[in-house]
Image (tube, rainbow, N blue to C red; front, side):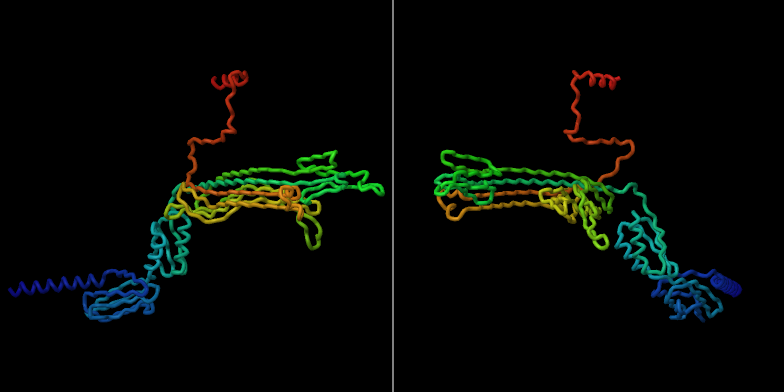
Length: 450
């Protein structure tokens, strides 16, 4: 019985010695820490002594006889050596890294749909993963830059084919109604009631009296002649009464309708602009040594459209829109040193809107009604009932303008090779089929059928 106990005891010593030998002779254990974090190493036997290669990076201290507290203080890699009371020693390779949890949370909150991973090596950061476009990769790199001295962007761009194209349809509709009414009367006398003269309010041209001749003792001039520069609308003269009347009674109506429908396509987030119209010259006086010299500059006019669309996360389209329609206005032109500089009649606006695909919005509207009335009359005579209308002139102008601008964005994709390409033509530009009686058309039809 004693022999058996001794054999068992010797066996246990051999197993324990073998375990300690294996524990002491094993390879170094790798441990990773982040700056400001601590871990506890549970040692299998009682600790005799510990040592670190760089206390400025890792601070290690025994807590109990078999526990070691390790605290990461700065970036770097150190070696921790632990001696047991039995004489065995173990090595630990400890790497202290930066705490990347705040950066990971920032990237996750900023790009919730992107697959971005962050790794660190000393003071360098590496971004890995897959993102949908180049802008996301650049923004992720910019967010990571403050967390390390250098940032390596290893993000891969997911190939999604052609980007979405955004088509903007704009409709300009303007209706301008102008009504004008003019009424005036000019009277002349070549001798009625022994009087030569005329009555006018001066608003419309009156006949002029170049000369009046007569003889002494005579109350009426022998010759009375008037020069008529404008007979207005109605001219009547009674020889027996020596009395003439010039009447101007005009009523005019003008209708101006402008309808423009510019369409423009661009990619997501890119500005696009176009101009359909032309340029007109403007003389410009030079100064300095070329004082008095005239140079010519050109200014654009026509239908202009400029917009910058962005597809939002809600699948809506946010746009900065700037439509404009301008035309030359010769009625308000200016003459300067022999040059005629035309004016511009312009309708333009600039705004920011957000719409869903296919939705429409009126971004601008104008209802402008103007009434201008000009009355010229001769004091006293114009106040006579009924007959007073012969001694006053009246001009009335009414202007009514209605303008709307409507935009409709659409998301579209380019036509693929082999897909049909249809060109829609207005009906007025479509050619009507030739009649069968036309021999040339019949001949062409026969050639096509063959």
